[in-house]
Image: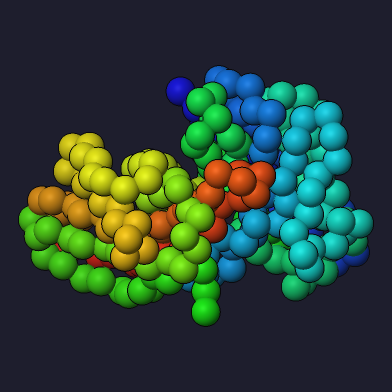
Amino acid sequence: GAVVSQHPSWVICKSGTSVKIECRSLDFQATTMFWYRQFPKQSLMLMATSNEGSKATYEQGVEKDKFLINHASLTLSTLTVTSAHPEDSSFYICSARGPSGEEQFFGPGTRLTVL
Amino acid sequence: QKEVEQDPGPLSVPEGAIVSLNCTYSNSAFQYFMWYRQYSRKGPELLMYTYSSGNKEDGRFTAQVDKSSKYISLFIRDSQPSDSATYLCAMRGNTGGFKTIFGAGTRLFVKA
């Protein structure tokens, strides 16, 4: 149980285009989901906390107009990277607060490369 | 000073060895302590989850929390080549909206 999926697993796009990444909790409902960014050999950097039916809470330094987060249902949150630039290339990982409310389960990640 | 300090390694051990991984932290408000395993280009996988101080064992894995020293450990017994991965410690308090702070991760290599 407590499986989180992400789609796509990798994406390559041109500079200036927008990319949408989906995060789904497959066998449980997640009122809270999180989006992280991870650079090579570095730890996870929390970008935003997404609560179902409300606006996401962004961490300091994260541009909310560039990284659009939508949590429209209890099993789906999306992250849209708008007007992507090469410096946005990274590994994006989502997670969901588990059924017990105490644990956090991660998706497999999405590798974004912006040319 | 970072809230959570973790030696990035790499740590290389022979198969069958006991591995000790650890983290120190500065925020005494942390109450929940986790260890995640992350394989290359994959998302982190929850290994151990403990609340407050004490020990927790699950198969070959043992997690220890010493809140008085602000020090947590993960022990892996009879290490296997398949244990080769990056191990991330993580922790959070009771407040702060479930915000979790992660260590930098320790890269472990278990040689056959």
